[in-house]
View 1: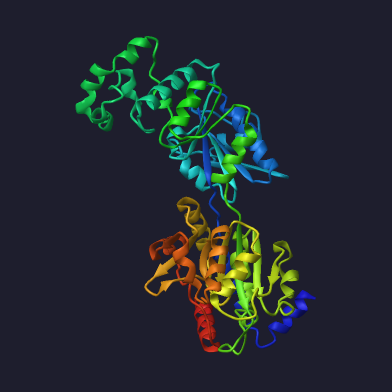
View 2 (view 1 turned 180 degrees about the vertical axis):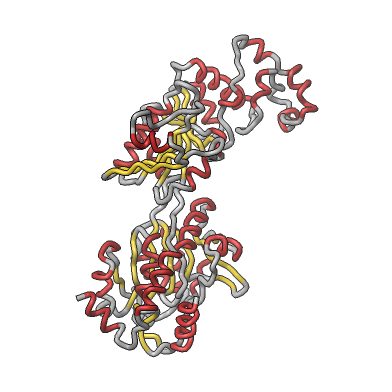
Length: 475
């Protein structure tokens, strides 16, 4: 059985109950809360935000995504509980926070000062592939703007949106100037200094025709597309043409599948394959690093426990799959793949090629099995950095140089580049970096993700491993 195999692995001296308790303490301290990416759907009253977000959530969930949602309620004093219910009585008695729990559901009602920032709400919603936010235009989130022809306010916004596009004003412009008139389209100086109050009089004098032509114009400046607008959903032709001029994608109101494609491609959390490189027998260690005992368990188990929670797919590259088969019974929920080297010669770059070839997801985190304090939080931070930067490699860098074996790789870009480097006879892990887009992840960012540090410490000899184990148990 898996347990029997694990017992044989530990036969060379188990540190005992104290070590196991310390390991459990370490696991609790290193639980990883995976941040959720978020996207806001914004529009004016009666634009159809709720209908759109409802349809989009249903489509994303049908595609296998875990979706959270946030609804901005602008009215002060709304309540989601009502008199007579026990939970309402708890709060009426003075409880500042009440949790309502039932099979399959839980709700939390908490009294707060003022209005909670959207960013704080999203930050508390861990582990979703995407959080869809209704409202919160000023949250700083990327936004999808909805404009519907049947809504007068939307039609007015579309006019202003189109006028700004024709005049060449960038998204994010202070569109309140439209209420006083705009400078002419060819007035580059005025256009470049729109927000400069010294230009206000000139703007009013030179562009008053817009206000004159729209006497029913109302102040909609706080409800206009901004530099955070990433897509427009509309049935107004003028808005479609404006979006095209701004190079912003637009979708029909009923094109939910197309909108979901866009959201999945650009905003849904990318799937991450975590690859633990276990290799085989280590000459300096005198035995396989994967099965050497550390704090009451095989070292490979420690790595799986630390990295498994942040993996969508977990692979261990090894030349001793039979000796590591006990992992399937030890971690049945992870469905671990044991993969042998793709080449019959050793080296860092061939090992990286094996990892990338075996991975099934677009992002691939590669970690060496002797990194005793490998960090799931760092893996998450690297994935977010890759998503934001568009890089092909996110690699920690410090005074010792690159740390390619606790880095993140974009599979489709890196696999052919690694193969080309191997064909040139290269063996070093970073030999292909000049052929791809590399984002250097600085030490300050590493410590922000993993304040305890030590992510790149590895053990090559029994003495080094023993020293690390002692410091771990003492800590």
